Image 1 (cartoon, helix red, strand yellow):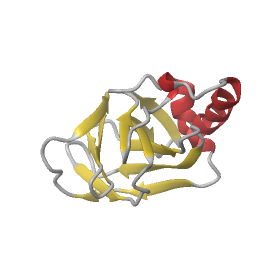
Image 2: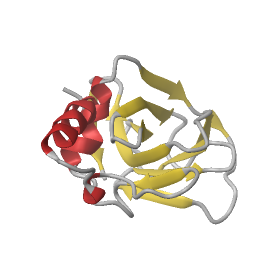
Image 3: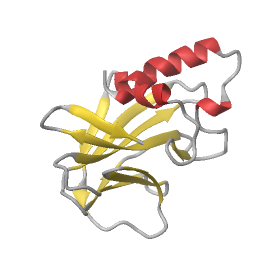
Image 4: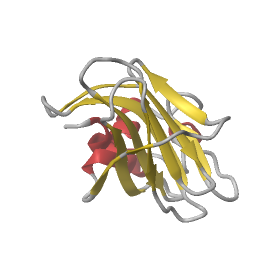
Length: 162
């Protein structure tokens, strides 16, 4: 099972087991877009981050080449950097290793009850050192949680996530 496919299952289990929402299991309640990188800011458990790939429709988008704006909030893992621009819902992904694998921004949007609303990936297969972008459109009050990952398309497997 891929890492984010497990997130949806773990989310359901955590919500069912907790009498109230568990703050450490996801984004904090804040008014407007609440974006968190699981690898940089959040204490989101690996099982929760990875369960979202079980979502009925996992959105897989190929990044287009570009140059990101300065001052991005990013998550990193060996071989990948994933950044999110809230104003415009744009993912920026950089491949940082010459390993033949793709850099990925692996994301989910969660409802206030921590259920998975959407899940997907912005995949940069443009090569080492390149930045790529994916445009999305999330509701203004979406909880957005993400991680930087590396995906080997030829082997059809997730190599690592932050």
